Length: 502
Image (cartoon, rainbow, N blue to C red; front, side, top):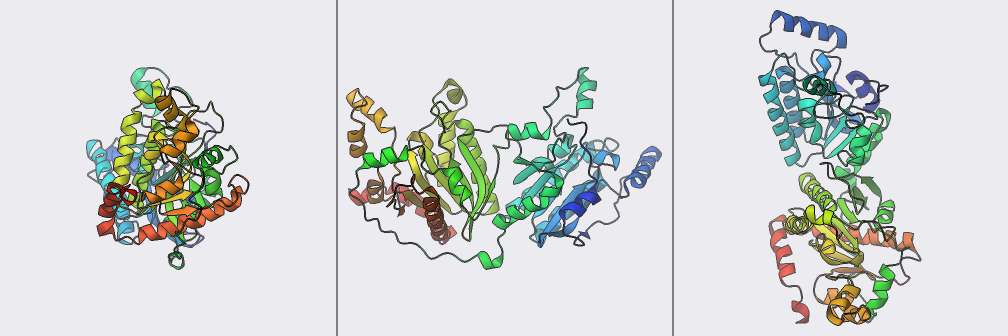
């Protein structure tokens, strides 16, 4: 923990984050459980110290003009602890936000359950979690700003359920408070573990953000998650023809391996809006995958993109990447946003760690999630598409391909080694296995091709802009599929792969 971390009280945080004069309180006089004289005195002293009547403030306000519901802890009120009255206030605020169809921003700073009330207060975390679940099931954003400190039952319930979770710099964040640990185990908890920057490194939170930058981040997120009514029109579908079907696939393989070829990161840099997320939220972060909220034109989406290793010795896509990808799939379903997957991989990581991390099972679970995804989906073949790592992100309503992309169970050299005991026949195997875009179009997999009249590596920005337009158009076509028919249509597409050329 950074001992210099300053606690920002609830009222100050609201003043920093909300538009001036926009806050409207939803709080009513709390109904406390039966009180002992000692507890009544504690509550009276807490009110005098904090200026609030409970450990949370709830209401609504505006952030850059967008109406948002807010729940903010007041740590000065009995260390922000949550008793039964606070539970009732939080649940009522979440339910009201859901009924009003408002996004919800939570700013916890709490030691957890209020010890003066014991088990009944402890059980309130279940009710709060259920209210958050119902809010998210309604397709409404739930954003969390973890403040210093947040521990115990608050961290283990509504503090850890955000679609997007960010934290104050240097904040103490964890399940077991250091003082409790030291009292129970008679030793100090290691420094630097329960601190926001470490949680970011471990993929548990999405960013570390000072309070004065929070409103801009929330506005960026909501511009993607809740675009304004004037930005809901679908772009006109782009042409689907592909005029260069006689291209040698080996030329495409070589082009796809050019280190200057645009990648997922560059594509997101040219999007109309992109907000990177971080890790699985469960303690894993793999550099082989990028997760983001993005908007291409008027089309908002969740993006799961494979990131090519910048150096040959860098690890390929591993099981943690696919667990992060499944976080993205869950986000898309909960937020009712289209999902865009970007495929550009040399293959899955082959290592003891990957095997013990359950790589094969993660590929299977990713396929299972995508083929059964209830929201619109678009997959993009951007470059190399090797093996199970590529297949794991492929199933979608619509598939878009860059002209020099390809899809194969192994790299051509690997296929050549199996069939010919040598890698020398790689170009021949690439042609024989029909891994290129023309063959994938004929097989019925690829719905639209972004041609590369000039190799993408020579005009990377222009190519990414063209690809972004195509992604927007494909999202619009995927969204036009009736939800009642979506899964059956997706199932039929993959059952009929190859029938067109049979």
